[in-house]
Image 1 (cartoon, rainbow, N blue to C red):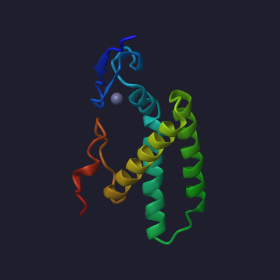
Image 2 (tube, rainbow, N blue to C red):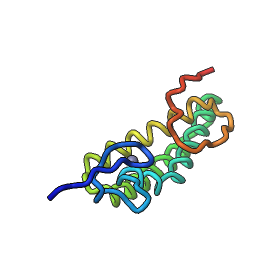
Image 3 (tube, helix red, strand yellow):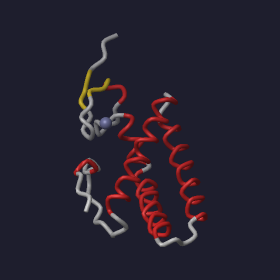
Length: 125
Ligand SMILES: [Zn+2]
């Protein structure tokens, strides 16, 4: 069996064509796009939690909400990604990026940009 290699349109990884959807996105990118709304919700909650925490306001309820959201994201990713370890790794890095975005935004409202690869800009005030 020869596998045809294609390049994922979104992340640029080379994957087997069987792993891609009709828009030439790899399994991971498809899974991540399905949870993108939940992830931006997570990011907003995290930024809110930071603001509350800095202000010394109670934020336990927020943390519980964040925990529940993380579980929902995890469930969705595991539904799409058969490899459990890969699913867990994808989840962790997605949540980490969301928290980083929330932290760098410093609690300000940021205009969402398409393409999420702006994390490493290092533009901390
Ligand atoms: Zn991809």
